[in-house]
Length: 268
Length: 342
Ligand SMILES: Cc1cc2nc3c(=O)[nH]c(=O)nc-3n(C[C@H](O)[C@H](O)[C@H](O)COP(=O)(O)OP(=O)(O)OC[C@H]3O[C@@H](n4cnc5c(N)ncnc54)[C@H](O)[C@@H]3O)c2cc1C
Image (cartoon, rainbow over all chains, first blue to last red; front, side, top):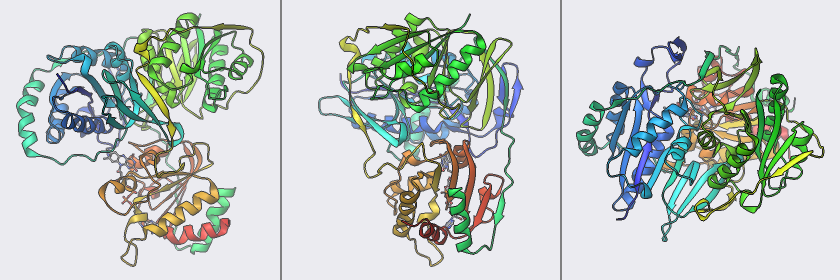
């Protein structure tokens, strides 16, 4: 048996072009009109998915699952686009995907769902996701899922993965100060929290869409509810920053004068 | 009673880095306000003089995991070391710096200890004997204050949250912990840390100024032509003279992938915003960048903001910058470089 069993964890987030306003819900903060805000697939998780699809394509015998916890209707909406780009098998859980949900609860539900995947060979597992979500932005869930599944070769901020002739994985991660750390990992099981990677978003391919929909719709229909508890977490308040700057708009100032002003400001 | 552990990875020279010393200051403050015990756990090839700094901050006990296997950032070994420290120190609260090395393992550590984690906190307070912390959600678009009852509670502290602690004292109680490293924890070999090819080192977290370049630098200008080489010269010239850190908008950084003219020194590591970095600098100058919301969320921690754009209605005009110069950035930056000399 050869090939990787690649699992990508990722869910929906509000479209970043849309303003967000927190309101108080029964379990703490929520987003105003959360259910009707337009959603996108979480951007770094999307990069993970494209990279994962590339890996699966380039190594025969590999398979790809997307494991997602989110409100069913939102997942369905986002799968309409994601499902046209990458051949995948969806494992969906119907539950909250917002930023205020506890990472530990999300991780546990994801790990359980992954462990229950029929036919998944954990010795060949390449577990992927975004290195942080665009919602909670904690960079926590994936590491915890990895711990649940006993994966101790974990990488975060991954921008590059290359399979070596001997089967080792060469991983390029982001380090502080705009630097990269390069590592060689003996092979799976391995966890990769992706940053932007190197691959452009694949174009929509209606054939892939057709192929996926046969599995995606049933997966959404049978999505189990995921109850994600807050377990000792209490929010005291949540607010969008109010501060709006009084922008001084400088028109018709000669270039030399602008330059002098900027230089004085830099030096000041 | 709470028991506060300051946890950090040591720099190659044995010292504590700036973010680690900022975190040490926060941990120290929290311990004092909570009336908690205060100790430190350090991981590195060797931990001098870092351990002396922690001792000066008042850490009663120091737990050290040392050795060449711990001089590198590797999940398997760092999480094993941190776990051993936590099992020895039995903290209820752990404060660690939100640097890339720690960020790679802190949540896994929380899971191992059956604790909870909150990363990138930007402030804390003690109310009625209870610790509350601030952190941002939705990529710096919502700020929340929260608390937890679960222990241990692990926290990473964002850079720039507090002035760094400095000091030097001989530690009173040092416990060196030997961590067993079976083969299974050494399946990863770290080859090294390097600047991305072609990029040089244009990301400078400690710079006074962030200079952001937008896609406008590569767009056709008034003469109908694009002037990418000139743009490169002006930008590099400015960076050279000011030692500013270079940021880029997503549109500019992405240009390279699409076979268009590109500024070769800009990579995704420079990208600022929703799917990029959120750097911290006292000042920021945006050029040829429209100032759209997914970009500007990356400016949350830039104090003074100025922008140069041809469009008086660009995003910066709408309360996002302190000053918007409606002007041609090519002309302005040429003159700026001239004035800066060199
Ligand atoms: C999911 C998602 C995530 C995103 N993440 C990010 C992110 O992390 N970072 C990010 O930056 N964007 C991000 N975006 C994209 C963002 O919405 C904008 O599209 C992007 O920031 C635009 O880049 P720009 O301002 O450089 O380019 P443009 O919008 O093309 O603006 C170019 C500007 O240059 C000006 N200009 C041209 N010539 C000159 C000149 N000679 N002098 C002065 N001004 C000139 C023009 O007036 C114009 O305002 C994201 C979008 C989405 C949907």
